[in-house]
Length: 585
Image 1 (cartoon, rainbow, N blue to C red):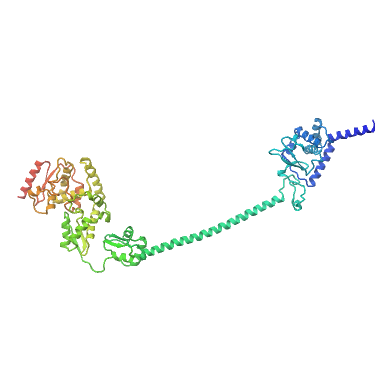
Image 2 (image 1 turned 180 degrees about the vertical axis):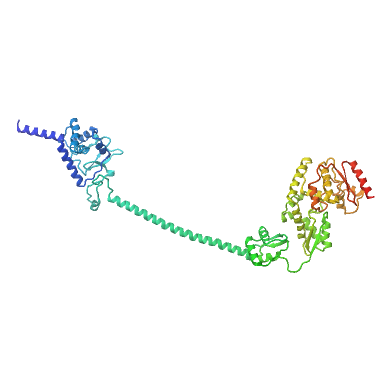
């Protein structure tokens, strides 16, 4: 064997040794690797190498692709594929030396770094991580998820998360701030730039919160000031309106008729004025008048007053107060059964109060339903258009008979109001309910209604026909029986109705009974056009609650004694007429 042959053999042996690294070579490579790490190379293990460290028996095709890549980049170095015996023997040797899986990883990295000229620490190149065998310098194509990777001596790291130790020639200050991404224990460290950014973000967040707090405080102050102005304006407005209502500085000159009841209190007067829109603040009116009154006790004159809205509180109360001058008062008694004409004569002729024309005008033209609002007046005025044109007085029957005290200078309106007010107090809710029951009964049997006005008209007939109260109920029953059986008894045949129209006299003649007059119930069917007098409560009660199950349809009374004879038939009635005349003789 010549020298050339020996050299060639030695070279082949050296090449074989390079192809199969032993334990010593592995330790040298690991020592070299550690020295690079100490010099500042950045280490970021990838997911692939982490998996390799956990599984030393990884797919050998991965090592083969790296070897093929090294061979293509450096043809002079062509290491052989390690035999399976060597791959199995290396872990055992490493465990004996206390190396563990780290030695396998170092050996693998050594195979990857045989091409030291092209792929050194700090250099970058493009890999197709889905096809490592195609990652050559000539075919460095990339896809989604591919990218530029940086080899740090121990791992391959994507450029999107790369920590580079390559000096920045353009920015030397930045090089001083660069830090190792991992500490000596392998824990990831945050760079000084990121820490600075985090502190900057915290500072900016704190400043933003501080600025928001300042703006919130400013907004609160502005809202508080606006609220103070609004509340102050509302209070000032109400004070001005109250003062204007008390002293009537600027008020519309509207007028209204107000009714002050008897023995009215200040609270009642204030409510009446408020309902008529003459004042706006009844509580202020009460306070002001009570303050002005102090220890005095004011009496208010009942009646109807025409008051203007532009009147101040003092003038209003002075209008309703009783005059200091002495007034002459008279007591007037209106008996049950008095007509409107008789009542007017009692005031005008006997007591020199008012005038007949004014009384008639007030009775027939004043709308007391709207003025007083009494329940019994509403149907009367609502049905006024359907009332008989022969009705003499609209309020006949409603001027309740009683004893009253009046001043001699009393006006006609106040007098009529007193009568109606008394009627309203006597005509109770039971009377309204009974009227509804009678209305249903008449509607079922006759097809016509029975109204409150019908009840008052019937009560006036009872009042005038009976001389004694114990005859009220049976006489009322006779009239009800005839009206409920109007087909057989269409006429009420009451003498009192004729006497109301022709005037009161001791007796009626045959000619009077035959005369066709609106109030002649011998000639006109049903009830007369209106009441024929103003009945008392006993007659009204009898009209609403007649004697039950009465069989009578006729009656006749002795004029002198007042005795009443009742009959079921016309024959019995003729006999009773004879008896009544015989009694007189």
